[in-house]
Length: 248
View 1 (cartoon, rainbow, N blue to C red):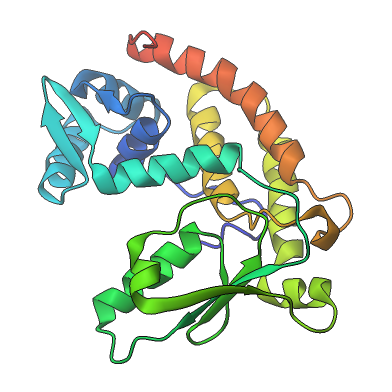
View 2 (cartoon, rainbow, N blue to C red):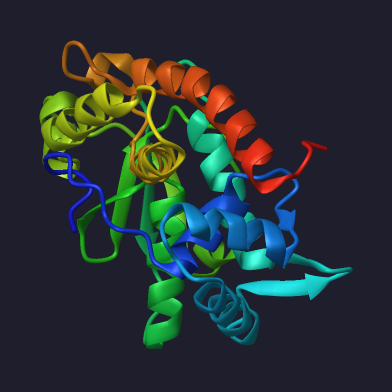
């Protein structure tokens, strides 16, 4: 499913229920009984949830510790990106662009995949094979995989930067999906709220977080974040009450 198209909310599997629950919980650790209770909201049987937990531990997504299931390091990094997407760290834009060019030869497939994943997390877009860029308005650290494979520098493209931006990101598609999700942030049953919450968080991870000068008029990014923050406070309180867990 394309999360940037018209609003269609993907059904949640037992794995995605567990993952979304833990990604939204701080710290990301809950007992099996609580995760089973979340699964019940979607008519997912206890055995199905427990099987998903066993498989996620075997796959290295979770670890079991002191009677709780916790996210592993890889997914803790995803939670950090998710949290950052709710309040991106930006700086005033002076017109410069981050440019990362692959300068390592003969990269094996796992290295190429790791770099692509890192660039997506850094919100860079690929202009052409091996050349990634974005406006230099974000504050974050680059993982070692970028330094290992790329030369990074700052520059300013010739021509209209807004036109370049529009070619790198589907801004109209992202905005349309954001407005549909904003409209879906309304009172409802816990299962419906859970599904909408997970969809909003996925969508915010795909926000390029561009300088205002490069965005279309009436960009819904900040408005969606503000609406989600208010929605999430109420939703999390109801969810914790349902699963019988106190916020730490």
